[in-house]
Image (cartoon, rainbow, N blue to C red; front, side, top):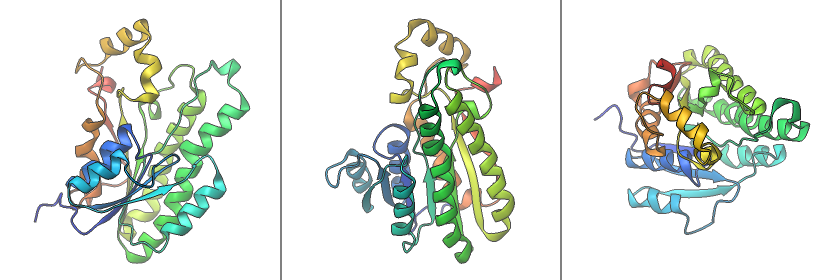
Length: 251
């Protein structure tokens, strides 16, 4: 059996309705996993993610939850607690753009809640069951701003830097108990979150000039690494933040 085979495993992917999360959910299904998808606006039936997952012969279960609402996150965790979740892909995220001097408390609180606090709550609650079983995979979606400061996104930079630290902290506690905790740091990927950058000719040009691969990434570029981290091939990989960035950090 291939060490990348996920047959018989159950994965949860937050932020699965589009972009990176959609690509990750499909990648897990293609490797053999059944998928529970979570998104604030996820359709009960007929969603694109459901179509892609079931096309690979795997089951898909939708859950709707607003990760900006702490009570909704706790309710989601409670509903998932009795499911034998093997893989948690903590991917959901948001961004608010404004110069730091104009960045409101409301924007800061919203981004930190979705991009960091909700991630910890879900990891803690589902991780507890994984620890009891002595097996599990938790994968966070970090960012280039886990390494850098960015421009006009102070809340996002703080949250994604926090995710890198949380990845290491959980790995330090859980690696010896059978639970692998790692993160993926996408580079500049063509999604809704980066549309403002791609629509700005000057910013778009400066970004492309910095990427050795010479192009924006696509969500599918994350497929291989999420399957790797979810699989037995990564059984001795703990506390890492893996960039998938077209060479951005090497420049």
